Length: 189
Image (cartoon, rainbow, N blue to C red; front, side, top):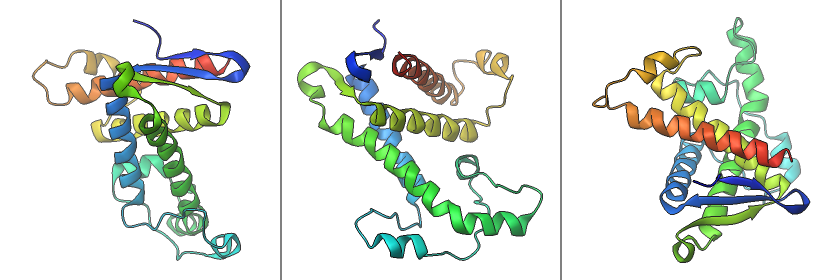
């Protein structure tokens, strides 16, 4: 099995992922966009930049969804008011940045000719590779929150019976980790 990400010339990262993997990545990235956009107006960068900078939301509470809490953590865990005020100024921009990264992945997969090649084959420049890294990380954080994965509980997950409904999701979580690891290694060359 070839590595999904390999270093290319001039800082380019070559992507080679089977079609089923590319489809799964695109689906996960679209779900991430949906999660981060739910109830939020995502800024597309086409409006008035000054207006977007000056638009200040009301103080915001910590999200109830554990995945969103993991993706958008509180800056002040011991002070609810300070956390809400900090979110007021930062959460929208953080959501928008994460959505933008996920859309880079979706667009790259959609632009490749995966049908003809039997998989995803394309080259990422350094900026695209960083977007992919951040998106893969966000996908892993989302799945970790959904599964309630904790540091040091690898033995628990390794011992899951094959009939456990969480096992396929955990396998996707570990696969995303492998993708992220190989992408970082390829981008570091």
